[in-house]
Image 1 (cartoon, rainbow, N blue to C red):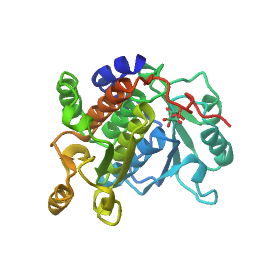
Image 2: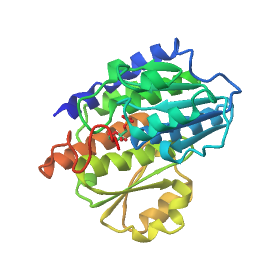
Image 3: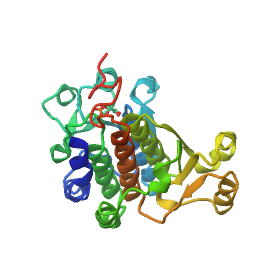
Length: 290
Ligand code: F1P
């Protein structure tokens, strides 16, 4: 399947993304008030970037699903993320804010309608994908955005290169409910990890901000569950609380983007074991067009 190669090529793609970030002048400058939008995976990348940009003190940054942008709001810049360049909600929103908010789109394919609708483009053609399930475009877009806000991406690609040679953990793979938790910018990554599990393996997967998991969803945890702290970061008492439910805790100290690669590989392995084609999820097209 395509997704295997696309997953394996991520460390190289991230290196190219970091190079590209140096010339991506259309990305927002420090101090600008920014909205970031996308659908599905691209929305989760938007969430991660928004939290990271704020954390770095670079300015107020709000993430929205493209369909939920509050139309009356004004921003200094709108960043649209879309691998395909054809997703309906993204294109509709770019039309809506045209001439009012300057826009820049991150895309894998500049020969698509997004090129006409966005004021500027950042093209990650090296991260284009054949699989419906997004892996390397999303992580490369985030690597580029991380580098642009001054976050060091080198640990991510070094760790990912090592993790790609390790087998999927059979103790994790035998469970039936998968919960991904994050904090700050890794909340978006937790949502993305859960989406990969649903798309590629039709698994029961959930995701929450780590502290919010205690406020109800933990009721479902038992010896069938995996509770995975993306990047290993967790409020100390929470791990003990989760362990008491019988759930298997995954909390390895890793760069969160590298840890996401482990979740992608788990999703594809479980999907293949179920006889699914991990490139072609049930009920999903490569780009969702209304
Ligand atoms: C986003 C999206 C993904 C989804 C699937 C199809 O499209 O809907 O979120 O997981 O891969 O595409 P795009 O706007 O980034 O092309």
